[in-house]
Image (cartoon, rainbow, N blue to C red):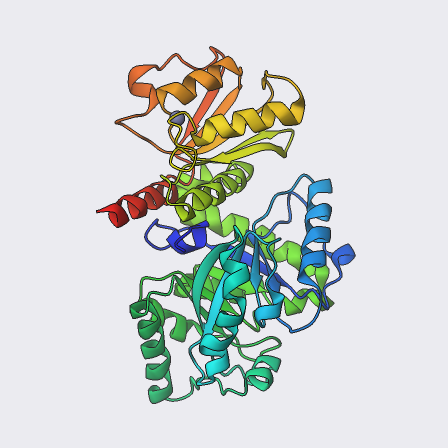
Length: 405
Ligand SMILES: [Zn+2]
């Protein structure tokens, strides 16, 4: 499976510029009613997992329920402690291999146990090297897996950390997760992050012991793509606001192309990218689409031309049909359509017929895009925003066509 919620295309897609914040919630411990999530206080991802207990299925359902009452859509990514924590409710799963340890159960054993349900689901799989680094405390992961973390306090230890990350890349992992552990006294140091960053191109996820926005910024500056916070909020839920505020400010500063798009455009384009990932997993040209009205997704779709043997089964067509069904009417005047690639002439026509008032697309398509052939296909008053997360949308297409060669 080679799908791509944007985590897996971060690096090549220039996502090193857009830093992302992930909030890790433990289904056994997290109190959803205390989370101060709002449109102004949002991480980029929610990771669910971390312990061996709790019911992730029920947890994700109530989390989504809570988010939907706030009109918020966030990718929910599993961070499973073992095979039993997999649930098809999630958008994606970090398929973690504990490469810092030598316990076969966590290198391959749990993967075999979870292979069938994951394979049979539509959850995006992100093969991830999980690397424990000594953060100054004995963590439950160490106890459960019976493995020791890598020691960053000597030159030799640092070299082992770097070499493990290089091995992960050579093995074809799609992300590296440097983990100091829940409740770590010392987070993974910026020096380590920098040293790893210099050697590998994979997206770098860093977590454990990050308690202040300054520590988060130091990790970003050293080369982390995603910073994971979690444990800290179980005791200080209000502190999340500081992180999210800081995250938005620094994201914009790092990437001018992103700052011109609104955070909700980026959020919905990520959902369109998740749809494109489903197409990629089905060996379809990876184009995804969501249609949004009043902050709610009312239709989604991905390219299904091969699956349905139907040249008209483009992502936009699927999403328009779904949205019309949701609303119970064929016109979508108040809706915004997000699609990962510039619509073709056919889809632009359908968007025009549906009277969609705003179109946001990611990557341009100079060969097949509507603009070259039918620039007036949309409704005359429709607004068009191009280039939102364009690099990621394009990278997904390039990946697909590279595989085909
Ligand atoms: Zn089309």
